[in-house]
Length: 136
Image (cartoon, rainbow, N blue to C red):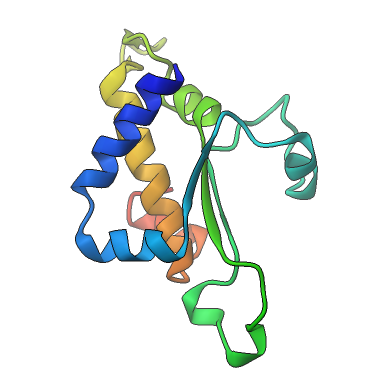
């Protein structure tokens, strides 16, 4: 699963504009299998009820000031398990309503949405802003 997932991440990143590649040099993209229990507790998320697809850590560009110098660098994390679960799994199928779900294209779409969602937080967009733009 890792190699397959990571290959899709690489292809999604290759399609992003060069300006976003520059951003990712400053705010590295970290791919992990799943968030730690400590992180889930910190975010007040019950891992039995909910998966986490991604997380932007740090101060967004709209909130930065000279007072924040010396802070840890910001990062963007994405989590394989949460993304694959949100996509409906690796195998293409249909849900109870007959709607298609899962498969490689669904995982790719969820990876793209998650990366762009977390990049949006870097630029100061709220959850509401991102949902309105289709990245929620």
